Image 1: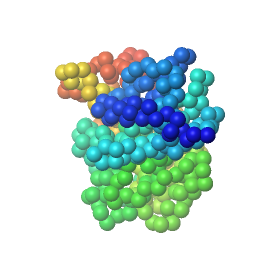
Image 2: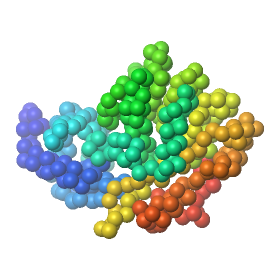
Image 3: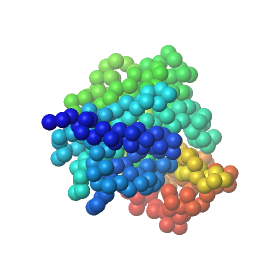
Image 4: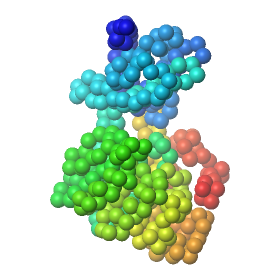
Amino acid sequence: MKPAAATFPDVRPMVDSLIARALDRRASDIYIEPVADSFQIRFRIDGLLETIESLPSETGESIVNRVMVMGRLLTYRRDIPQEGRMRIDTPRPVDVRLSVIPTLHGLRAVVRMPAELFAPHQLSDLFLPRITLDFLMEFCRSDCGTLAVIGPAGAGKTTTIYALLDHLARTQPGISIVSLEDPVERGIPGVTQIEVSPFGELDYQRALRSMLRQDPQVLSIGEIRDNATASLAVQAALTGHRLVCTMHAGSAAGAISRLLEMGIERYQITSSLFGILNQRLVRRKTAAGYCGRVPIAQCVRMDQVLRAALLEQSDAAGLDAAMRKSPAYQGLHDAARDLISRDTTDQAEVDRVLGPVENAAPAAAIL
């Protein structure tokens, strides 16, 4: 049987051209997707999918086979999902991630382009509002506590955390910083990065428990998604560590509710949680349309009012009301209006991401 690379030599220039076009368009992902009678090639640009071209099924299958060979995947297995990495030649060679999964019409491949090529690396490059930067600087100066960065997938959470860790490593070079990630998206000088597998032997729980024995001062966890990881993270924050994590929650009150659902006691949350950064991304407005994205951010500190509401058994609506009492409170729509006033984005884009104000769900409904 001929090796797959020799079976489809004619598609190599097509794959090289496809990757080059994705880099030129600053696409975050390439989708090679089978449909009923063809393959659709789509790029994700600034968070939205754009169809680039439609190819005959035979050509699309050959392209999928080619990227599987490049990613060292098993081309003879068409019945299981597979993941891998492949190296592409740019001015500086970089690794990209590849995911393949069987569908009704054939194998669907997604190539995740390297975030390091386009994502901002420093906090000053994120275009965060001053109130958010001050909030993050306050966390950097703190001795302990957890900073939870929340939002849906694709909200820029990892980019913000990477920039925060980079800032800590550059401005506080004498501290030990460890990051547990699934997967590691790019290297950060001065940070020990560990790739974990939530369903493998080195999961978040095992890696976090082991790392706590090595006395790090700052810990970053890709995502808190279960009771065991949440309990270890809380204990780390309570014993003098600074911890950064992500959570999938629709609101700041929702993030606290998730911790409660994971079995974390209210008094533990009030003592361990520094604050919550709620984030979304909107496309930046330019003369030619949209280009790039900027964050809409909301900062919530664990202040006395919120602490009292939490200890008084308040529900999500009560927690949200307590957050709004802070003199520095700014909701996502408030932050969005500021971006619109500075002509950084427009109302249509804000409505697309957040929904119109009158249709925005209250915190209790989100949960």
